Length: 71
Image (cartoon, rainbow, N blue to C red; front, side, top):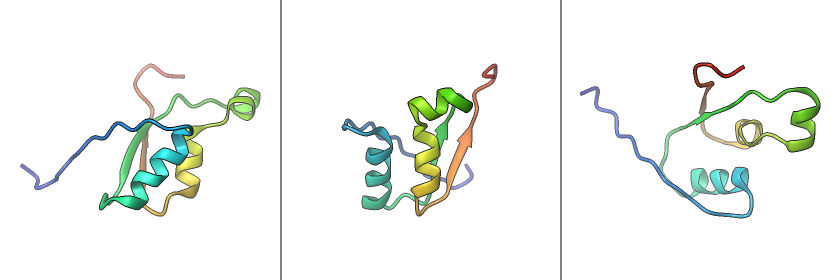
């Protein structure tokens, strides 16, 4: 009722962040929304962060939401 068009896409690839960035570049999306668990410190350094990579490298706005109850 607000005139927004929302779509969802599932992709499979070797790199989650790379796949998301590829889709953002290839399509007419104006922005993307992602959730995050908020890993910090050593855990983030060892595992990396898909959301962090996408936010830093995307050429489009990324809305990042932490689900309720996540610390």
